[in-house]
Each structure stands twice: as structure tokens, then as C-alpha cells.
Image (cartoon, rainbow, N blue to C red; front, side):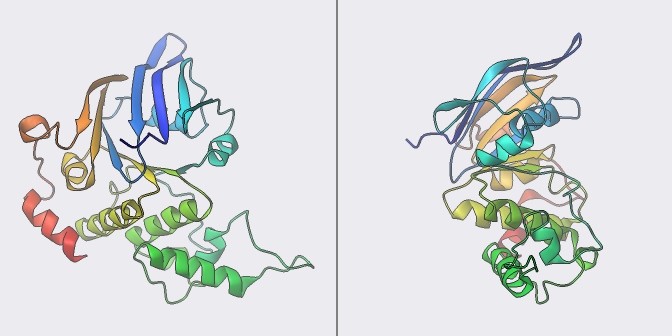
Length: 256
């Protein structure tokens, strides 16, 4: 069996007397989508902020490629191959696709001038690899659809070395068609086989459509986990999404 790229053991996070996480453990494997499910207040946001280096755990341990790591900042997590795409995407809608793709990491010539043609090509090609063909990388991000903006943020994280891609509720603010676009992008990334994806969601249908492994959180604790095969049947119940049946959504996913 493949070894997990990241393993989390007994993470606890306390904010004063309040325990946001109470001994959370999980493993994420290359080439898999790991759905992290739970209602608001379950501890999902706290967990991903620890994995992204924003918060330090009160106790517990994170292992990357079998070695214990300590993230003192988001820079440490990024250096370890952890890429996080938050709900707000950290994109400037007035700037171009290319400038957003390379924000803070621009390619410059000997005199400090930006190599725009080179950056345009990279931004275009990296987005195309995961299914979005942007005809003009100089277009403003604000003119793109929500699904395209998600793809931009995902492509950027991968290009700059993410081996664990953490996606924070990537479909929550989108219409149904754009949700399917994002899910299809996630499947394309998964098909590479070398990236582990943590898919944070409270939408059980979306997780059932694309996830290989599941962890359920409630009030900071893991209340269930397993692979798709282990959780077959009634363990993952069908939820309504705009009145659509899961079979209809699966067909849409195939045709995006």
C-alpha cells in the first residue's frame, strides 16, 4: 500500500478554555481525494489552518513523508509542499490572470523587468493542464467565472510545488454548473497521481462524487472515517442539492 504523504496524529488545539480540536488524526495519500466533512463549528477551519501553518497545535504531531514537521508559519507549510486554497482565493480581481498567478513570485529579467510573455505562457499552460483554456492571460480576474478563478488558484498552488492541496469549501459560493466545473478540475488534478487533495466541504453529495477517503468531524472530534468502499451504503447519505439527484449530478460531472 502507498505511504501517506502527510499524517496527522492526535492534534489538539485550545483557544483558552475552548477546545477547537480534540485529538484529530488522519492520513492523506498521493492520488487520492480526502473529503473532510462536518457542519459549521466542527473544527475543519482550525484543522486546515494548522496544516497551513497559520496556527500551531496545542499538542499532537504532523508528519510529512514520514518525518515529523513543525510549521511556525505558512511559509514553512508551503516549503513542505502544503498548498492551501481558501474560500476567498486571495486573488486581486482588478489584476490579470498572469499577475495573480505569479503574485509575489514574478519572473524578472537582469534589469528587474517582468518577463510577461514567459509568465503569460506558463499561466496559460498550467491552467490548460487542469482543464481551463484562458485565451488571454492578461484578462482581469474579475471577468472570469467563479469556477475559473478556483482553477487559477489551484493551478498556482500546484505550479509552486504543492504536494498536498487543501481546498477550503471550493464549491460553496458557486452555482451548480460552476460547482461541477470545479469538481471536474479536482478530478483532473487527482488523475496526475502525485498530489494528495484534502477537500473540505459540508456538501455530502459533492464528497461522494469525487472522494476516495472520508473523515467526519463534529465539535472538534473525528466521529467517523474510512474509504469509499468501507463507507458504502447508508454511511454516506444522499443529500439534496438544488433538487438534483446524485445520478444527475454525476452525469453533469462527466460532461463538463
